[in-house]
Length: 131
Image 1 (cartoon, rainbow, N blue to C red):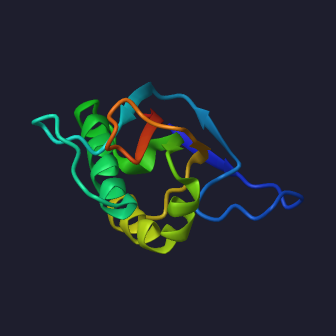
Image 2 (cartoon, rainbow, N blue to C red; image 1 turned 135 degrees about the vertical axis):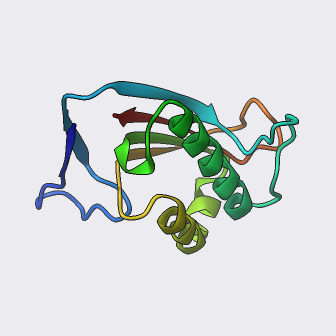
Image 3 (tube, rainbow, N blue to C red; image 1 turned 90 degrees about the horizontal axis):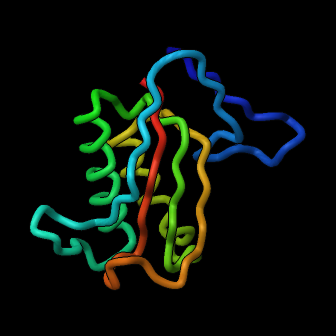
């Protein structure tokens, strides 16, 4: 499996994401949207940074069980109830990203939503990986 990141020079710089990812071969894994629910079904974390860490841990747990690793993520959709809060905390979120995922920056989208299934959830992230 190979994944080639495409970041055209005539587009805005891709900071923390890739504009496009081309995969050749492999097995595609679709990862359901994850919130910061723990195994008891309770939202963990009072703020966006704490919830981001739990969300990504949950997503990576599902990916691992499917046989994948963080470097095989090719697309993430992030749904946030407060995109401005996400952006304001991007430095701390980036530090968590580096610790959990490293230097892999898949194609990503962040969408602002009015609320999520779990009322206390501040964000939900779904993904696609190519194994």
